[in-house]
Image (cartoon, rainbow, N blue to C red):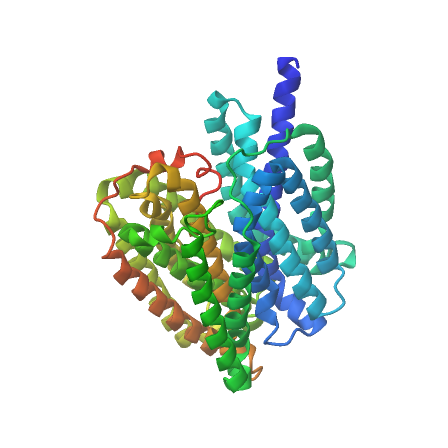
Length: 488
């Protein structure tokens, strides 16, 4: 193949994998912005509302590991395109949903489909680009994904404000259709197939046990306040906890067999990894709670338009991006865990100040009063989450890096799902329309402060300085493009 044609094929393949990753990343943030509109348009009950976003995150977390080994067994391109096709179909189902039940089912399907697409991306980049060009491709991929995470809410708000073809919030999901269809055609033409010789054997029993246990715990948690923590809910939580314990035993027993476990339990004997995963889980949880409650506070509580709310979120995201780059490249290699501690304390200060402002000003609070707090919250998050991949992998052996990074990603996603599903507990204004939204959001900020204080205390159990430089982690196979998902 001539060099010019080969370069064109590589660029097209890169465009496809970036479009797929952006669909996954941007879709969640766009739906967050649209959630108040969705609730009023189709009458979503309070107990069902968190599952529109939490169901996506939960399905993504559960299917992520199976999606990785399915790609190795059946071909990276094939599973990637199946995931993209399923994501496109699920987007159409969600965009045309007549009621909340169909929408939740569509969102769960989207999350599962995204978990088939996303883990194939680093392998496709490795296969498509020659060894000398992989670093540039990964850097470009990271820059585009970072931009998408910041711009996603604004794009979703712009769709809502424009009311494209009179579709309202449905356009946020239906916009995936042309992108997905174009990606399917180009992906089939431009992406070469690849299989792994040493891929783990399938572990469907472990996946089914873990998924069932998580569902038995999370479903009652999302409905607990509305049902008064009924006996069936408590029994379900106990049963789900038992199933997760059985899953851990199953994974330990599978460790020495062909294919290996879904979760490498021996990783948790490494202190820096176990503590780092705990911090990942906390940050996923507080992010899941905060961003949804924040959207409702700005739109339902303050009466702001989706675009005005999204511009505030853009300011927050910009603060995260700036401080994340400063933390990962400059501060963390020099000061170690002190940077994470400073980040947690900065966020804690922001949460406490924001809580005071919410109580003091109520619905009269102005954007200029919120912006300094957003710098504290976003800057603190950037300082903390950016080095977490280095913290997680600092003491992990080289052959376990990919498994450890994938487990960290899954843990973060599970925390996000838990946070979203706990929204009715942390944000009681969703349950009582007569409850002042500003008071409910202040209650949410107290939850946030407690989680941040816990994260701050956990950082003292980390090593003072990393044994690996961040650049060593980013060069590890499959970690750079598919490592821990500590994004906003």
